[in-house]
Length: 580
Image (tube, rainbow, N blue to C red; front, side, top):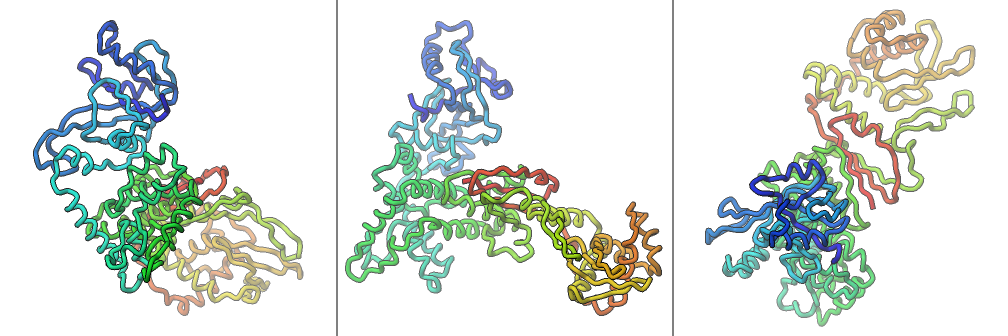
């Protein structure tokens, strides 16, 4: 017995389906209570007693179907179907002849498997079996690798001339891939197409380059594990047979994992294949095979080319992130996690139009944040922390500064709050922001000065995202004064003819804001903006803002823990974690 065994178990006892009860109670039960002499029960009991802690158990139901199949059924025959309802891991086998205690996975998605099924109550399927049917079923059940319908249809004799038709379709797809990248302008795509298809189109020089499929290349590795050998069976010789982004991501992850585990042997194999006879094009073989990113062009092709005219083609992972708000992608380095994360982000931001960040507008790209953690990265860099600051008197102090994640949340929250306002309110807010930004652009830090109504002078020291720092001289001693941009925006939106600082105190009381000495400085800046308003109001008016999604990607190269306490404060933010 090995941990490669998977047990598919029925849910019916008598005439009743106990699926919900099994899941709710965290258990599974073999029937025949008080009928232990039954011959079938004794067969199932032998299998039940084999099951150990951590073994995989999957709830199943088996039936037949003739119509509404995900493949053509030209003969109209009934096809055996097995629905996988729930996957779990055994916590305890009390060996009482009936019960198992199971830890059911909450995120398992029910799915249907066809052809290779079994109706008995406990069906043990071994991944170590040299049977393509079994290995495909286990990969489908554990990793949601798409079932190869053509394999089973061909095996059962339900399709004729399938290979010939398939080859024609694959050649067309390869040519379409080349046309997508305009091979006349970018010849580097030609070897990439060769790697994917496993052959070179130039028949005259074909024998001069020892080109094989990626699956065959990996099969030459002598140190492959049994699991890796089984995984190779899932990889088609011609990768153009894969027609969806989700499926290609899974297969490319399998390939990348094997390459990473056997990098030196893969390098040696590539060198042995790069023996070019005569005048063959060396660069069109494996001599420049990109072990880390060989898959990216076809991934882009699938995610964009196949989406044309389809308004609901978001990656499955994208939909999962939209619903859950947080996802962690875990895997070995070089297996495409970062690429997938960026593809999902672009997919969400563009509403399914593209998975390529380069195709997003500048405004859309601002809806994506990215940070890579390293050993010295901590809470103060990411959320907030104290930063050294030189005071006007020359002494050093500290100031609380937002980290990159907090700044991103504020940007997302601003969009969310603005989208909930009327078009008129949005127009006023956008106009006042444009006016304030235009005014700030005219300021020369350290030189631009204004006078208070009482005669004192001050100048602009620094300007941050949310505040304006001033320096005022009182008795020839510099003092720092901080004005909040948000308060200035409220004043500009109100557009009142304030005549003295006292008017501001009355105004701010409406917002429960109590000002003291700063009122004089707010009044001076506000008055200066109003006097320059005509010159500053040449900005282009923005369209009303709608609620937009924001995606923040965290690439963790080493295991670190930073509490994302603000991650769920905005319902238009999704967080993608990448852990190697």
